[in-house]
Image (cartoon, rainbow, N blue to C red; front, side, top):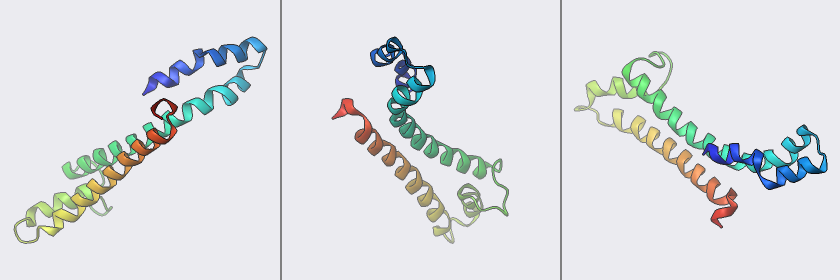
Length: 120
């Protein structure tokens, strides 16, 4: 995903803007920034999904949020003792993690499809 970000500064339109005599700040704001925002948005939405899973996993292991603070991972950890009597205690936090991660992945996919001109 970093290829478009790094490659944007050596594209022909940047070289043309540099040849015309535009200052560096104008080239960055007017030419490079509009071309790197779509990949950044996609990457951010996918990174949020990864952060949700990482936080839930760390909280499940007891290394994340401590029990007074609400966390889906700590809810799953406390529900594993009651899985035979009350399986819904583990189902709903796990389902919430699944839905949140799926939503952010689908958002990133939709943003990529909508904002990437090469896939049209």
